[in-house]
Length: 97
Image 1 (tube, rainbow, N blue to C red):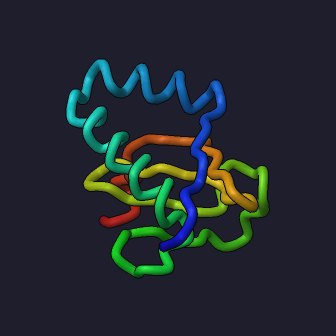
Image 2: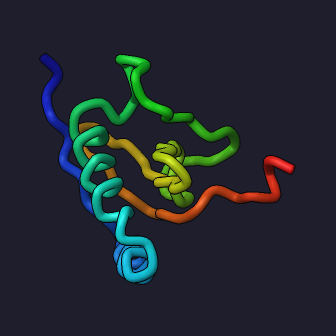
């Protein structure tokens, strides 16, 4: 069994989450699910989650990894035993047109 990662957030993430949660109540469930995933398998070794390592994004540049849950995206960085959440928001709709 892999050791658990500690997950923390930056203030910008907290503001985004509060604002989106007021309009989208399902986000609280998805955030809890994201925390469980990131605590156990942030690098997606099990290949069970929709996690992608983003190209041309370095550590501390707003999230090297993206976790997609339904229509929401969570961007984060992974260090030795920790995960830092930087962003949560909708997927970009114009990408898929």
